[in-house]
Image 1 (cartoon, rainbow, N blue to C red):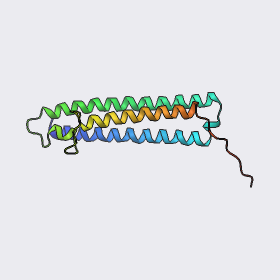
Image 2: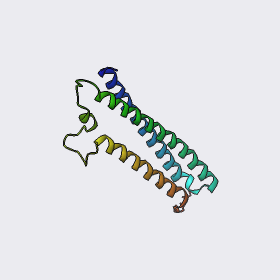
Image 3: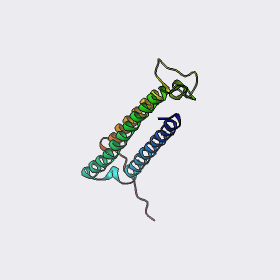
Length: 142
């Protein structure tokens, strides 16, 4: 694989990760809106079904992110085998100069932060769906 091919595939992997993030944001935003407008007062079975469907969507997104991450690792390994790459591998994994933490690359930190955020949001949505007691809303008469 040539340097150009690897670089193009890395851009494609970044694009795929951004798509996964956008879908995650859309699913979570839609679910939060549903909670606020009607799901919070819905019967338990409807809330459970909605949460299950959202969970299935997030599992697919997580699986996609994992596969893209592994492909990206393979592309980094292929990049490292090039004789004279235009950019050293360490610069690809650490795009912000001078920000190195305990031998962990910025790319690895970003992946870790992404998973922590995803799990935290999922647990927060679980709490808001099943444990949180939403305040009763009063209807205003016209």
